[in-house]
Length: 64
Image (cartoon, rainbow, N blue to C red; front, side, top):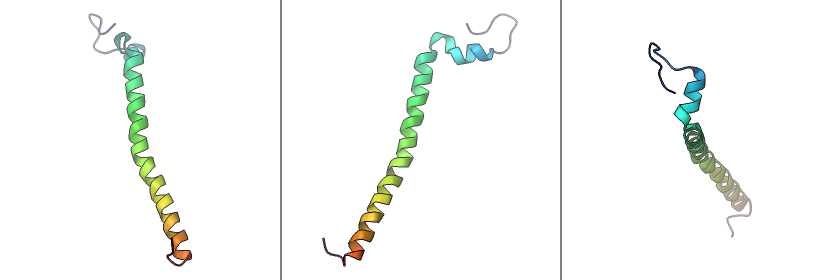
């Protein structure tokens, strides 16, 4: 775990293992990525729905 005497860097395996906390670290990174992506995707989907609703209402002549 971590640096051994005489080594100045971790191996890739040690990096991805995160000192035994890999599950928690990579789960938090993954969840953060998913939530940030949702913050971008959700408004775009909502905007598309609103535009479709406005266009449909405009075609009907503005009646509800």
